Image (cartoon, rainbow, N blue to C red; front, side, top):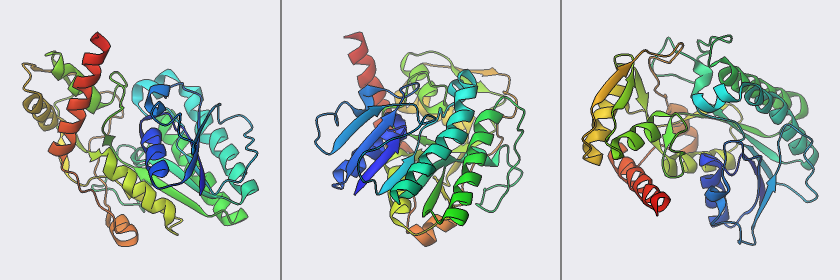
Length: 314
């Protein structure tokens, strides 16, 4: 198959490019490199089944060859990024989704949207199921990302119902692993970077807010299975093992054998108090659930950050 992946030079996008190449598919990777990096796809550039196009997906997309799948992963995805690029975030969720759906329609291709657990906002139910409508502050500091993804989902379902596009929606929960940017603002790279430098780990609020963390190889497996399925409705993908941010900070200090202490800062506005996926749907329809333990995944990720730090110093 020939697959177009927007945001293919980002964290998840680059891992997905690699998985599809490994499966024998041809990949067109499209990215404007606002938050993505060519370093993430450097190992694929010379592969004859891989092609990179630098382009903003909010502009007209022209591909002069058949396309079987369009996977829309383009978007700033961390609070630091989408608050730095609020207009771009809204545009890639709205115009980017519209342009990529238009391409899928023209090519008669199947379509997959990389959505997010942030469509649930600061949820009033835990765990979160796909039929929960969410608790989102559209005007708050996270609104540009949350609402961009909610609109994108609505547009995908409109194209599915009106134009008959064969669509998928992956609601991706917290994912971590190699190729995360050191300073992208998300908790995993932040805590690991601070711990490796023996700097204080910054915990917001009292640390009682919860998250659940899925290792990247598990997430890519879930996305790949969803891509090949016939499931048109949204599907949660994530690890249902929940823990507090304070406990997570302590685990990072333990695994890195760091001398870091924990410091507390005010909780940002609209920061979700809980985040845990109900993956019953993924288990039933995709026969998927996360396999890699949190500790195993963190060890791999910590080692990658250590190696990257050594290479930067060299």
